[in-house]
Length: 148
Image 1 (cartoon, helix red, strand yellow):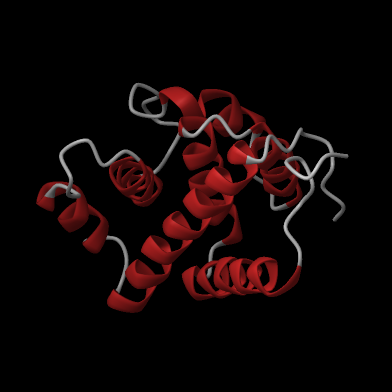
Image 2 (cartoon, rainbow, N blue to C red):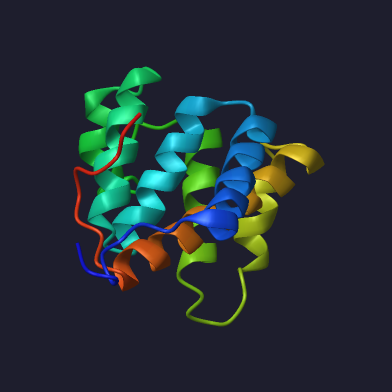
């Protein structure tokens, strides 16, 4: 294992794990949390995180149909409820900041489905997985190394 492919260790990994855990806990819906982190990981091309979170999503009861269609969630009518769709739209807007800002309409859509605290945890979760994705992709961590 080279220095580039070695996983994070120490205080940085602990802090990132703490943020991820707190955000997921505060969101209160483990299945939705996994859909969010999988969608961000798809956008960021993070094979390690996809491998890990697809397995976790299945453990939390996310359907194979939802997992199979996640990359095309906007076109998959009837597969995701409005709350899930709002969270996925926010995930994409925060992950891909093409305009430099999250569009107000996307944020307001999410705010209709999440109270203030849940929304803060959702944004925190999106930020956390984007951080993990960037670390894992930058260090070229291959899939399959996750130990539950």
